[in-house]
Image 1 (cartoon, one colour):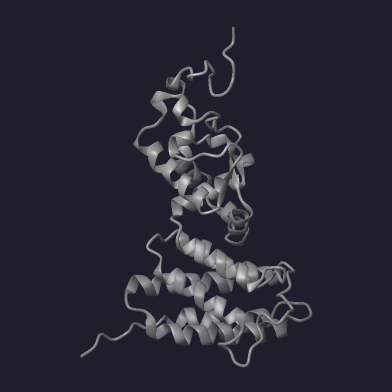
Image 2 (image 1 turned 180 degrees about the vertical axis):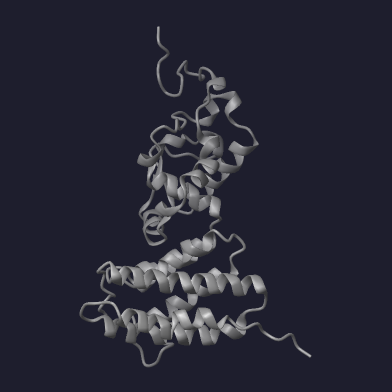
Length: 273
């Protein structure tokens, strides 16, 4: 006998479907009934289709978590006065053919498959944000979704840092290439530098100075490309905790035991006389 597929929990389906529509309908203001009518069938239809594809308890938990999170985020956005996009994003011949329905299915499928649990809500943010911004095309959303699926949580922490360095002013990021300091390139540094090099080659990170190998990276010159900024915004990467970001970027920090660099500078500055 074949293995029976696990059902997505009734709680998740209720929250995403009927309860979502009812909750939106109770929010004061115009157009809320229309918003609920547009979004509720999309959630219900997507989940009824996905329930037969879940093959493990962990997948079920991730799918439930993402579903409830997206539904709750949409309700909070509407309560805050935001308006669901008014273009044809959620319109189709049936509940499965609109771009909104396709994106929701894609987001939930990616969330279900994540082995790093902390990525689930970040990926779910893609649908939440696209649902309220008509300037974001379906193509842009799909590209960010595909990109996010191929990045680790550690990669996303790097994007979070380089997208909001102003929140880490006390962090002494290295202002010269790693190669200037013989003691700067341990195994932890190699791992992070390799991630940066990969993100750079994929057009997600940029550099003022450019580099061809990990030892020539100047961490302070790194920033987000337009593609990287798109991921930062759609996934709400500014919501990643500072502690998680710092745990990833510590190898990029100048440390006192590095001493003076090959050009006689101390982290890009001339030593005091």
